[in-house]
Image (cartoon, rainbow, N blue to C red; front, side):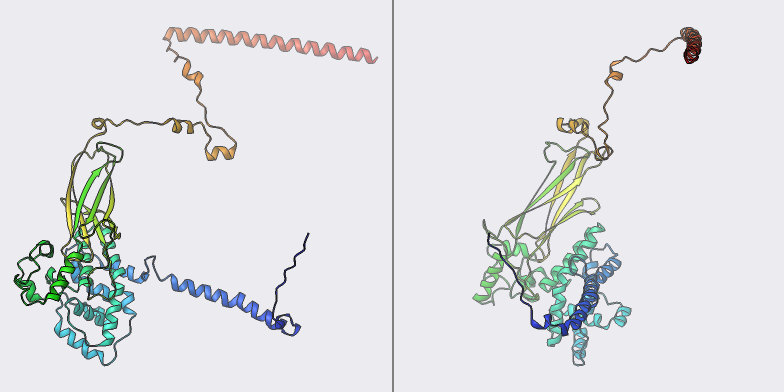
Length: 470
């Protein structure tokens, strides 16, 4: 056999006896000081963040301040919540030159709900962020390069922060509040104010043109075959290139077809205690088979944005958000499944409503009413079926029994085979008790006689032994 040797080449100063003390000092310094300090600093830094990448401080702030169920809470309070988040407060303070620009923006923007003065005093950077966000929503131009960069940072962070706003409101089952935060989210994407027309999302549209167009809803405008024409009111002064941009937007915007089906998997009817699966199917009509959706048309946003659809199941009477699901797929046909547990005794006609809300465009939302009958278990003919494999599991020992070395408990078939004893009458019971007493006395006398015979035999054996010894 061939022998193989492996050697490692080390620098000469590591092998020198003169440097051994220094090498030992460096080794223990790295092992006992540098590595623990790096590990502790890494932990201290990352424990500030949640799993979604936001600061824990931001989530605590949002959780304590989202406390209203009104449908306008998101648009009114959203800019302040975003401006006061931890990610926004860590931006740089204003330079002396930008203070004049902030003063100009305060005069030009409209504050639908003024910011809390105590917050402005505690966090001066929050006042700056608030005015910059309002200027973005109302499409007021910013003339400072520093403020423009900070606006882009705010918009970039807004994607994750507004997602947390919607999720917190949804977990409280506040459907109207969740929709208001989605309105704020897509207003940031499209740079729309509370009172802006949805037609302002169309390229080259101004408030004056939006007022002249007969269709006030963007979906009706995009569906109209003759909508994009110079003969139409408001479009007569547009150039051919501008009309081409509008047609491209109409082809790119996601007009969806929504279908909803409610059933119980594996059953033809729905009964109480069933898990009802509500399947929501969205089909993007602007895409062909095999195509996928690209970034949304958002020229005022800081980065490319891909649309998401939030699907809600609500009670038609009180509009409570019972279940919700977020769809992020960009395919032509997307699907979401909402599972509803029916309670025992919950029978009759159930009336729900399924909402599909787009987070990137205003005016593309859909809803479908879902009605179904829930039968009782008797009317549905449900029977509990125990499979043979499940029955055989009872013959195997449990984990605890296997540790103790015990087997499964076996049913005594003898007890099941023996008939139940009949009850005796009073006289029969007395006679049986007398017989039992007599039999017990006889048994005791016989046992006494047996004891006397044994004692006599022992005495005779002991006498025989004594004679043999003599």
